Amino acid sequence: MAIVKPLNYEEADPRARAVFEDIKATRGVRDVNNFWKVLAHDPATLERIWSDLKRVMAPGALDPLTKEMIYVAVSIANGCEYCTASHAGAARAKGMSEAMLAELVAVVGMACQTNALAQAYRPEIDPQFHAK
Image (cartoon, rainbow, N blue to C red; front, top):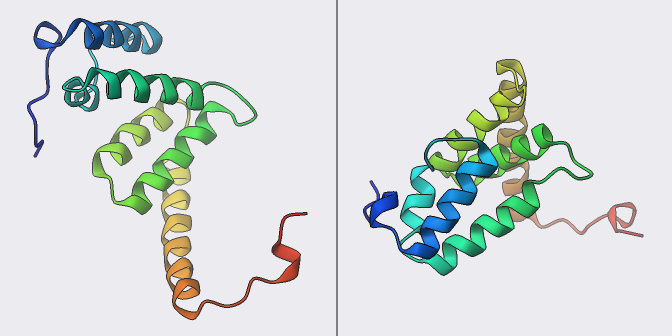
């Protein structure tokens, strides 16, 4: 349950409305997700997060599907149900199959398990794993 009421367009500050308009235009959607509506309570944070997300998720060395799948993996590992659902939907729209999602979840689960063991045992990092 949200700790603040999502703000619709009419309730939002003019700065938040401008971000809503940019999100809708950029994504080609009629309305913004609830995440953006709750951030609208703090227009400065809304502007910053949207600007950063737009930049980070833009095409680059990684293709858009890979970026969305990474976002899903991190969201699963962080336990964020909202971001997992949102970015899994975006990844599916970019071509992620159910088989790809199943493998991704298996990798996340394995990484979480081995990360926990490595954190518990704290082995020294092997020399070949250091950046050169």
